[in-house]
Amino acid sequence: MTLENDLRRAAERGELHLHYQPKQCLHSGRLVGAEALLRWQHPLHGDVPPERFIALAEENGSIIELGDWVLQEACRQMSEWQAQYPAFGPLAVNLAGPQLRQPRLVERISELLAAAGLEPASLQLEITETFVMSQKEEALPILQALKELGLQLAIDDFGTGYSSLSYLKRLPIDTLKIDQSFVAGLPDDPNDAAITRAIIALGHSMQLTVIAEGVETKSQERFLAFEGCQQIQGYVLSRPLSAEDFAARFLVSR
Ligand code: G
Ligand code: G
Ligand code: MN
Ligand code: NA
Image (cartoon, rainbow, N blue to C red; front, top):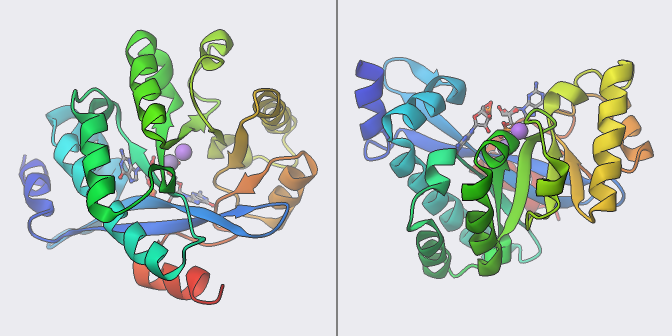
């Protein structure tokens, strides 16, 4: 498949870049970091959405190299931003299942952090609930090693992955990220409202930060603030932006 071959060469051809979407504290209104999201500008097909190539990359194994490029670029960008805006962070990066299974992952991340001169706490890893819950025996020691290094850990797409609560309790995580499918129905859909409240309560009882993703409207934002959700991310604040636009809009004016 040609898209598959193109993907393997995308990094070296300079076709990959990261976009950044801000995260905000609902209580203070302050910026509390950003999520890095991978973009592929294909010379013929234009912007290829990650939905089309992340799964492909996971299947053919190129996610390891792709993910390594993402981590390296995120660290490079973060070190540039922290030099100018020391209070900014953490920067969150999505990690796919196959990346978490690499034996040298922890070593590699500490190498990248050291090369960029970053504290481990400047980096947050977003790991899907589906991976963590489907690979319980395997995931726990990996998460423990990443936590020992000092990274922040978030469970992404929370609510879609059939969490075992007894297992969740043992995970060394900092943050639950409420999946955007639940946020979409707020504030009117009674099921989405109930699920969102339950996740917020669960997070509080486990002393985890709860962030809602995919927040698009002020009425969703108000509902989440009222229910005690700490952070939001979504179009209501901003779409994911290029590094340049993100800095101009969210860093320079601080
Ligand atoms: O930003 P957005 O629509 O474009 O992302 C679509 C999906 O791709 C989301 O599920 C997101 O988590 C995933 N994604 C975006 N960037 C990365 C990345 O760098 N690594 C992995 N594993 N997934 C990513
Ligand atoms: O990593 P994750 O699966 O959570 O990726 C977040 C995805 O959601 C990305 O594709 C991003 O572009 C997208 N996104 C971010 N904010 C919003 C929003 O407010 N509404 C919708 N529909 N999608 C969003
Ligand atoms: Mn994510
Ligand atoms: Na998500």
